[in-house]
Length: 279
Image (cartoon, rainbow, N blue to C red; front, side, top):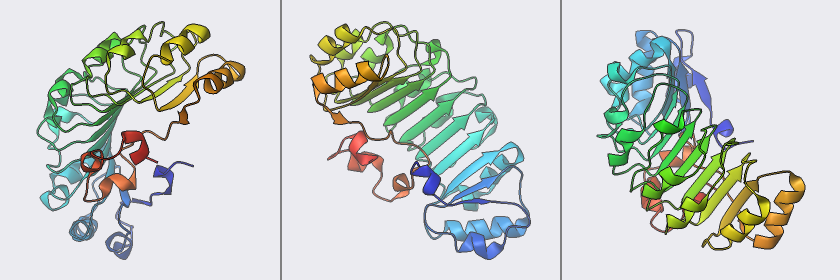
């Protein structure tokens, strides 16, 4: 069970009890697929004045972002099929999940964004290279050409991105954590040697990597934690035994209630790694 599955989620519609909205605990996620009535919006606006909360929006529910009372305090948001070029994003947004959709990610540059997860969609991450506060980026099911790594990024996770090498990661001079999963095209990870801050690594479903060569190379890196699956249980156990590294903790996600606290992700990263923060 993941941490995000433990976070309460309340569906917003005209029949939702107003007291349920107003009395929802800190960190609650509210989901909407259409714009609810005025009473529900008023209750959510009242709830937003007390503490942080998250919204999960799709279709007509995205219209909630036009309500300044709600958008002003919103720190965590999940959007499905949204066109970013047609939305006014909340000014205090710190974590965002995009599932499908389109539009330029340049709209994210003015936001104090710390965690971003993208799954599918017509997105190019090149504008994010300029983002000053983005610390953790998770990208799934995008073409390799859509992936760009900025100098401020602390953690990157790719899932189903057909990378043959990790040359694109060389620009991530601040990267402390790298995860690649479902990448059966990956043939070389030698570019990781160019990352001076790298301490945590996950390689899963990277079947083309040679076991012995991978072990030899990983021994040259200053790693502290590892999760690996590159060719069956026996091979994975052999890597673990020979490298003797700590088990990698979960990757930070926009849904994590811990990322809604006032101290913020980047503040805590001053003393801890991203992996430890997500534990």
